[in-house]
Length: 201
Image (cartoon, rainbow, N blue to C red; front, side, top):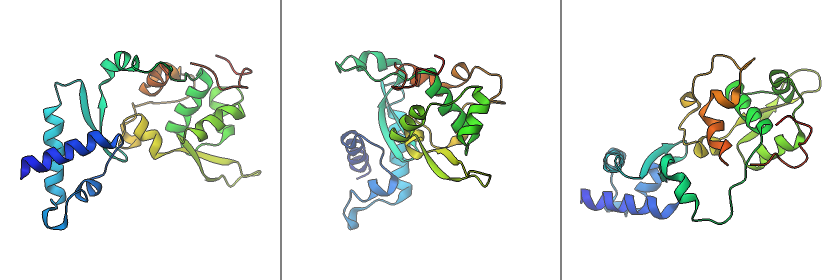
């Protein structure tokens, strides 16, 4: 039965196309055949080992477990789709990196670190991608919105928690685009959000 449990979990993760939690994997089984959490986790750990030398890996994100193509094969796999992924400009990448490390952060705080204004379109794009959201307002005059990253942000960058972000001693006077793995991944994806031409590239 252990092999069958593992096979069911493996097949379900492939079919889902998104992260599945341990609870969701448990619920695939009828009550009388349902494995406990320990057994499911053991199967997941074994699957991770089984795929260590494969071009596909099983990773854990903030939303659960999922299969994904290893980064080294991404260029080849991307050729399956005619439509190229959207690229994002430097302003958006820096803004996202600042929010990730400084959160919660106001627009003014982001602008202070970057040294230039932040386009409304940059903030709108981050909100539309659901990589950041407004978690409240700072208790200062004007009550500016406080921005923080989301579970979708963690999932996209294959992170379980913010603690897995690359260490960054300071955001001031640093080339953020070269300092973290976040923008290296995003940098492969091209175009400043429309209307953000007043920002430096």
